[in-house]
Length: 582
Image (cartoon, rainbow, N blue to C red; front, side, top):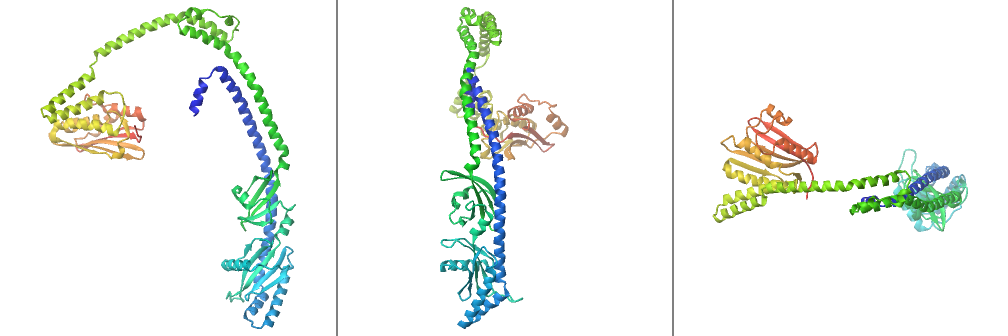
């Protein structure tokens, strides 16, 4: 996509390029200004958030402190020795009169706690016999809700649990089981369930400036107020961390919301501020900047187009004269135009005047060039005549192959076919990089010919996994290595010689090796060969040639590695990149 855009820009006329340049400068300036403006506004947002977060942290800390006091009160109540003995008496008594007297004492004891905290609606205790004992502004709790509370407190095993307000009761309920203990005797018999109904609205109003700017959530349940401006589902997607801020649209108004999540209770506190009132002037400045830049853009584009045309009009005139020269009309192209006489001595004026001098000589240059081209064509024709047509050679080999097959000379036919395949691949220059599979076809044709020469003295083995056959290497890399192995390992001896071609992967490299069990090389000879001081005695493709072609094709880290053990073996390793080829 980007390449297409750049190609289109490159072929545009200069006046269009200048217009695009001017528009781009204005657009970049606007973008830079807009980004700086947004950065400044983000700093302002951050300052607003810091202030809002500070207020929210103070509010949440105050609420957490009051709730912690209530939690401590619930612990003091269940640990009250007097209350423990009274609840044990209720559990063990069978007299209705005694039960009435004891329960009255329990209520009197609860009153001492209920009156110490103004944010408590009531303290209600359900004893082991299921009777309710309440102190304060007691509200009846539905049986179904009592069962849920008692089930949750039993699972809590003595810990406190919060139960959030439900219509019609707006109280936040703190509940925990009461278990028996006496000094060091913790028998933990069930004595009852303690409920403390908390006026969470009163606590929130005490720490918040105005009602409704503070919202408490616990997951998807609303703690305060009963009818919040936003439901938990509407804002949970914006709560991406333990604290932060965001804006929220509601009924055509935008609100700035800072939030924090309590590490103790896990509740989420939201502080809501009307966004439009705070950012009204800021939004006006944003819109004004955008309008001003649009006006500047609309004004500068026509001026830029007019300016670019004044610059490109002389260029268009010069292009028209160049087209005349291109068609061979040098006489008319050489004549000065009326516009040229009015041109100033700037770069374009000098270019017009210099063009006439160029046209005077262009005919001579064309003539000389034409003569040179004729000479080159004649030389190429003579060179082609001096070459042997490879198709004649292929056709001759095909004829020999046909005669061998007719006379049932299968060895001659196989050798001719392998030789034709080798010649075709050696002469063909269409592909300089082959796949490993294609290169091994050349090797196998070469081995076929050599096996007829050396009979069973040549033992050739090929160990190449199929999944490596698609990797790439330069043409005629392995066949010269095989030729060297035969020349130095098999020809000097009268016995058998084993040559193995292997391929394997090492990290990200392809390693192809040609190994023979010949006489090997002394260490000094091996070092001279590696350094390039020792030249091959053969007339084929040398090792240094192969190494240089690999490095040119794939880079300096690749090439040939030679290993040799005198009297045992010689191994040439070709290191190649792990690249697939079509």
